[in-house]
View 1 (spheres, rainbow, N blue to C red):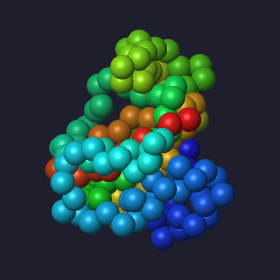
View 2: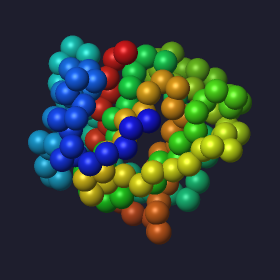
View 3: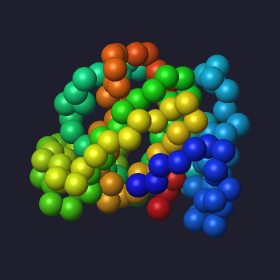
Length: 150
C-alpha cells in the first residue's frame, strides 16, 4: 500500500503510466464531479460514488486479483483498514465479475489510514483493505476509486 498527498503525484510517474494517469485524474477532479464511471484509458477507469461512512464494514477486507485500487474521498474523510492478505481467512469467496474476495482475521501488523483532504491510498492485489469506516462520526462522503488493470 502507498499513502501520500496528491501534491506529490510526480513521485509516482515512473511507477506505472496507468497509475500516474489515475493520480492525474484525481488531482484534476472537482468536488462537484457527478457520480458515475469515467474511462481514463484502456487500462484505467474512475468510479465516483457517494455513501455514508460506518463503524464496521461487515464484509471485511477486500482484495482484487486483476486491479490496483487508488482511493480518494474528494469530499469528506474515510478510514480504510489495511492488512496483508497472506495468512487471512476468506470471509466471502472470490467474485470474478467484481474481481474481489473479502477476507477476515487481519494480521497483527494490520493498521489503518485516514484518506481525504489531499491524502490518497493505493492498494495492490496483496493489500486487504476495509473501506467505508468513519473517523469520528458517520459522514456522507463522495469518493473516487481508480481501477488500474494489472
